[in-house]
Image: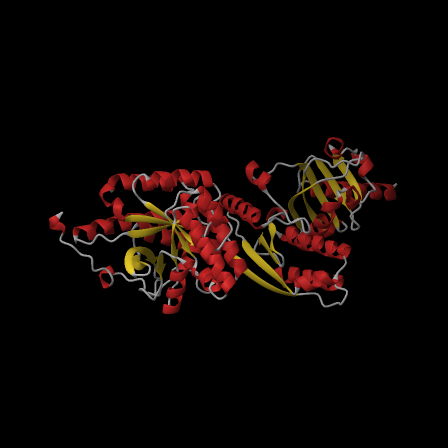
Length: 562
């Protein structure tokens, strides 16, 4: 009797411990897994969730009832749970008895070594924590199951917004697998697919919510994760995986960079732009190149530092805290000045000039280029008025990004400026730059027509650098095109190139469009573009950008006579 009571007591204690463990988790279906991941206990709404009764699940391994594409992820999550003691919530799908996939199911759980090294797992009908539009827009790399760059940036933004309520801190890790392409070429398709699926599972399992990781390009991978994730161990596991899969046994060298990726009270729209910019700069290893001295060195918090740069940039732009310089465009062959192009000049906190191309890239990638373009328009119209009062009637061209010309708020603001400054319109021109491609040609054409109604002439900048230029030329009503200087330099090296350039100039003339040659720096280049038929030229041969145009402009008359 004593032995029977002792056995009964042990059984009751085990039951108590089991349900105590299950109290740590919650869900519609509760599972206990042994060390071999075999289901030793199941209770709950298994039928409705995965089409099997709870009793039918017992004795099966968890992997055998999971959909194949989720097995590597769950395997890795359980591996992580052995070390951390718990498994973060992830979404999985099961194979139903009719071979169909179940609906998405959320899985979370604990590993308790004191209870026989068993796992205690809760399953529930998935409640997608991401907004519907974000979840629906996610695109994935087929080989790894990881998100692409833009999808990852959107999901990271949502996770950072959620962290404000939880107070969690996150880091972002970038892994670059050096010599990855040669490795893939050495492998058979099946082995390569298995390796990529494993890498994807490793990264997802260690990321926030089990799915905040992405393949950013061929050999670069990024993930948002908690600070306690052992990045070094993960790096070693990926290296081991690659080496084991490599027929030559070489594998890859992995370069890892980690930065904080938390967010203060940043507006959601600004945060989304800052996250995408930060990820791209982090991948390029140029993440700290532009920042008014805030992103120099290894930034402790990339998103917040990027946002600080955005705020600083916005403040300088809105308050017109930047310089403007003017470069002459001359008529050929006389070299008489026709107009000036106005260019912005920004300086960092140490007074060093920030390269314009880096500045424009920053402004476009964080969706602030329209603010710079509008500020330049405001500043230029004020400058024109001041010049007219001094008796200087020089014409000036302002650069407007392709991004801005598609922004209705920007265009409406420009129209309002034109309405208030009608007496200066005769001196204003607009150059549409193609650092960002115009996607909505019809909308751009409508706004350009409205600008031209004020007497503003339009120039297409950097013509010749892309096939889209010809689409613009046929669809947009413009007065000038400016041929990219590098295109001219390459074309004029051969007779065939000169013939092509002449044909391009002749085409523009047939369309009643005049043509400007950029980056003319020698007399020989001036002579060649003149022979080809260019109408105007710009370059250091005729003058560098200067703050004071009276260094070039002599056509000053007495304003009192007018």
